Image 1: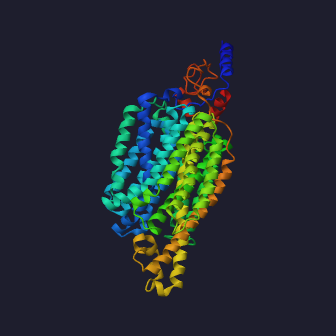
Image 2 (image 1 turned 45 degrees about the horizontal axis):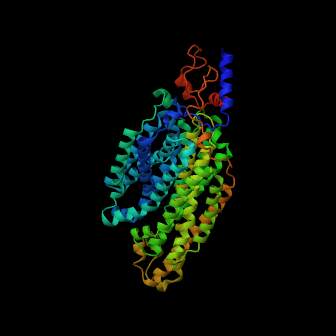
Image 3 (image 1 turned 135 degrees about the vertical axis):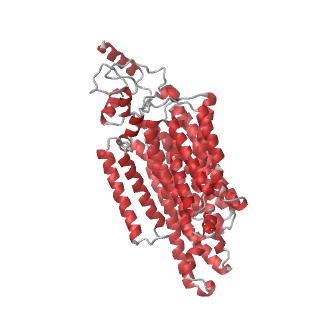
Length: 597
């Protein structure tokens, strides 16, 4: 009897051996039962899109409000943490949220993430002090990290991989455009209403996303017991990963600004961050039984290349947007709304390239050429952008934005699709690969804004200090101790005598170009990385495994982890179906999964 069943299994597997197979999540649910159609699909995706828009806007909306917020409480030195606190925690928690979504379910995890983000936004909106505002931003960042990764996981489960490229195009456009318009919204709220509306606006929109998810997103529930859910989390690995990231980013944030680079505090942060990161790597890949970042993802070059690509892509994107905003507002003297209008060329090129890439990938099934296009347009576009000057014409600034926009639009699409096409076939492989890809993106964005700030501030401080020393007649009674105050606010710069303004604005322009030089170097590296992509193509609808294609009758030795096992087996073999599902990352289960594929 057992031989007949095994023979039947081999016949079915042989018949469908050319099918593209994505394994189940490993939580006892079936991947086909996660998929939706019609109105439920549209409204589920809409709720995800709203949530994604909010957390992307929140990354950059504070850029044009920091001065006002700092002046309100007289704590300008702390005001940079309004942005950094959000970006740091969002990057820290992305991978953790992705892992936990397998155990606790994608819907409960996404609802919790949105709720935490809403709580943080409410605290920010009513904050009575700078410290309270920073706490609210940190809480919002924790929820934002979950939203960023869970939205892409949920959408990936709602539709088969052959149809995801257009979905990712839509989400990519929303995320990127929201990041660009964030400073415009922040400036508009600050100038016309109050900066608090930067956070109040999240409450009704986030509430709308919650209601839509509750009413229309109906995935099957995880089969884990509550004890199993909490026992599957690698608390040590999660803590080490978050601590290493936050210490390194804190060192980059305070170094050269609040503390000298050579100070004991800055050096200590760097050393501790580096040591803890090394300990995490050793723990995660050598000792951990519940790896935060699974080994079978890291050892696949076909996954590593797109993840490194998206890391570099968003590092460049955040730095480019941040300091093109500075160019418009400080050098050209535009208000927030006018600066936002001048960003339309970047928005349009990004939107068109992202949607076009989604459509073309779906039609041609090729991925690698679009990744290479992202690398080429990024390197050329950033190199050309370095020619920007104080007197560049409107047509020149438009031209400088087009190629970087194309680079980000195509790069986001290619990296997300390629990483999923090449995801390991272990249980939860797609979810953990999507988590790692979004973790790479979040980390790239955090490093991009911090590193660009370091380069700009250090360069501008040195140039302005030298200018004041060399031109005492022009700067008059301005003391070197006033340099940071002058550089912290465009309004202060505009109060200087005209000759002094010209010198300082020239220093600002040179510092912005230094950021663009840095971005050009990173974009050149990004081009090299895109050459390492796997040539594997997106599977067609006919090549993707469907529910009716593959329904073998398994015996007790070959059945999937998520299916009930023979209860006549002893407890030494397996305690329960759910318990066996909970152990899907362990070496025993990885071997079992591989034996099926």
